[in-house]
Image (cartoon, rainbow, N blue to C red; front, top):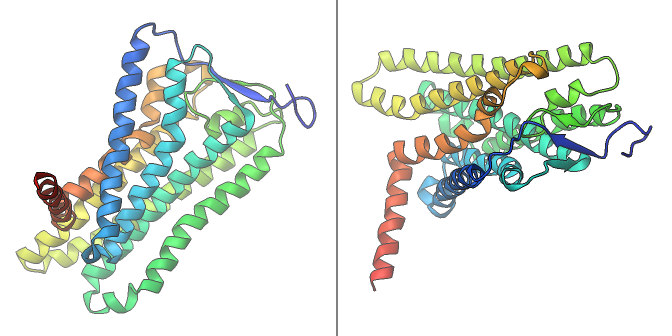
Length: 314
């Protein structure tokens, strides 16, 4: 053990991994399949938007950014998780644990910010269509993306800077991934105020964007009621998947958030895995919802596939 004051451990141990015997290879194969599917599906969306000039529009740029964030968050979780499934020991160094926490937390912040920005984009496009091109310029899209990326990164970075200066009195982590909540529980100091403050901050960071998204889509629904059936269908085709995605993501986050209120010894492996759905389900849902549901992206993907078949046949 090494530390600034001989207390902070140089490594942590994940304690929830059990000896599954030969089943570990089955779990590893399934998890690897999920990870490869996430990478493949999100890369297809990213490449489609980047290579097809007709998709160089704000909505598709935001979708591309969302898929890039899915790749970022999944890469911060799956490689280490896959290694732990096959390993007999489950130790992670202090720096790598904090890096994993930073990636996970910034992934969450980026996801919430990007989904909020996408809601604003749809609000302007449907409720203020005459001003859309003057408001959603290239400069504005760039500013929104920069804010959506840097705002969570700076907030999480400042929070981690304060956390890293505190001493830790334990290295047993009853999780399958490093999380801020379990690290708080092994701090040497009284963490009551720190824990409550972080939970309030997390709740605000989730429910304020959720309230904004629900408000914007309520306004969109009111506009759709007074519009033609064709306009209503096109609006709902882009807005409904986004609403479902955002609400699902907030539910998954709430599961992980609620888990932090329980005592560590009362939490079982199933609830821990359930709480990590926000790292697994959204990266799978996003490319399916936006890739298969939106005809523009779907048409580009099928066009690439047909072109690939023609090249292969010749």
